[in-house]
Length: 365
Image (tube, rainbow, N blue to C red):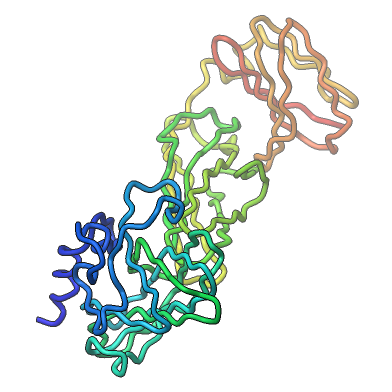
């Protein structure tokens, strides 16, 4: 029966809710002035529900009903059974004309003497609405009521609160979901894989991606105009990430490949994974013996190679480890490609044409 109180009060006073969250706004919808907010108790009625002038509102907002106090010290209570083993975030908006101490407590009954667990403590007094939040990892046994305490310091005459929100949330947690879907690629070509990461926890996170190299190599990562495998996300922030990778040139056309991108955070207490499935394509032309229309010379080469052929579009030079070294646009029948930035060794050149891709090898001396 006790555990049902939490659900019961959520139904009575929640104006809106989402998964794992309760927004308590009963005092806004009381439809009467200068009375204790709906669902709450205040022994001396020091907390009341009232209609305030527009300049007290935070913008944007659709209503003018708030809970407020003008007492030097005041308490009000609502039945809310907090479960052990659940992590909570407590958030509210508040404003004061001076300096008020605002506290949220939990305890077994609706009186100040029984409140034993501090949930949130904030100093309110800027003259504009501010959001105050705290994370509570450990809830002791017997927390069946939440109490709000307000204490006025010198010069303060009122405190107003709005939008009390209770979230069941981990301190460090995030989720990831792919944006781009399954794709097809030529072996040795580059592809882009897009996904988003949402910080669903209480604290800011530094999230690191660890793309698998079973089928891909030559990784780069972009997010918010920044390059690197570690990206930052504030609470509730959604970050879009793009990882570019090269499908290994030795992958057989027609086989199945995939790119796993596990993600971790420094505490190793939460991970996420996105997977992208890739079908390696067989180029229209793949054999050097039956592609006389495309020529790559000289071979061996020292300073440059010439790519000659009709309807060529792009050349990609890949080393034997599958790492892309150069990508050069081809817009005429013969294009010279400088090799001064390549070390000596054997390379693969993939020439894309309007009819398919030609794969050749050459040696840089």
